[in-house]
Length: 343
Image (tube, rainbow, N blue to C red):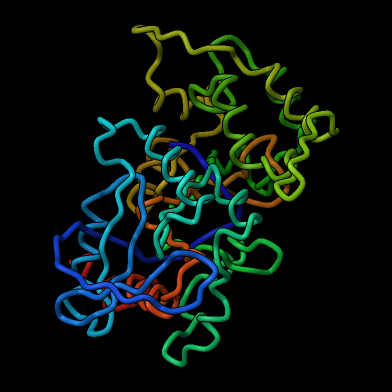
C-alpha cells in the first residue's frame, strides 16, 4: 500500500464492468495502425477500456456512463482474466499490449510504469481536451494535485481519487518543523533509546521501498534509460536507511502504540487516506495538537500522494476515438457522478 508522486489534494472517482454486446465493425480508411471504429448494436461508438484488474468501482463507472451517454459505449479489455489473481502476469500482458499498439482507448494506469510509458509516447496529453471543452472547468479541481501529475508541462493521466501520505507528530515536539533534512533525520535516529522509534514499526525495507517509489525520477532517466545510483541524494537515502532497523520483531508484551505516542517513544505516526475523524483520533492518542511532517529523508518536493489504479485514467495515443475517451474521463470527474458515487 505504498506511494507515488508528490504534493496534495483533489476529489473524485471511477468505476466499470464487462457487459456483453453485439457490435458491427467499420474500417476507418487509411490509418497508421490496424485500429478500426466498432459500433454497438444501438449505433453508439465502442470505446475499449484496457485494465489489468477489475474492481466494483470500475464496473460502476462504466455502467453509469453507458446508461447516460448517447454517443459512446464502453467495453472492458481485462488482461487479468484467467490469471488466477496474478497481478504481475496481468500487468506484463497489459504492458506488452501497450508497446505493441494492441491496448484499448482508455487505459488503467500502473503507477510503477506510468512515467516510463508517458515518455515513450503511449499516453496522450489531456490538457488540450480540457482547454477545448467549454463544459470542463479545471479550477474546480485541486490544481496542485493536477500539477503533481505533469511531465514536461503535459498531463498524461488524471486521478479521480487519491490518498495523501503524511506523518503526524505531537505539536510540542514538531511545532514549526514540518520537514526533515537528511542530517536531522540521522541525528534523530542516532539519539533514539531502546524501545523508541522515529516512525512506528518502520523497517529498512519499508523506508527504501518508499524512497524508490517516491523519488525514482531522481535516480532513473526515463527518456534515456540511464540510471544513477551514485548521486549524493541516493547516498543520503542510504545514510538514513542504515539507522533504521532491518526488521520488526513482534513482542506481545510491547507497550501499546497509543501509550508510546503519548510518551514520545514514537515521534511520528504514518497513515494514508486521512479524514477529519482520523485526525481527531490521532490527536486523542497523542494527547495534544498534532503537526503534519514531510516524510523523513524524502525529497524536498513535499508530501506524497498515493494514486489508485482503479481511479486513474489515461488516453491511449493510438486511439482513433479520443473525443470519446475524453467524454468518459470527463464523466467520472464530474460533480454529478461524484455525488452519485458517494450516495
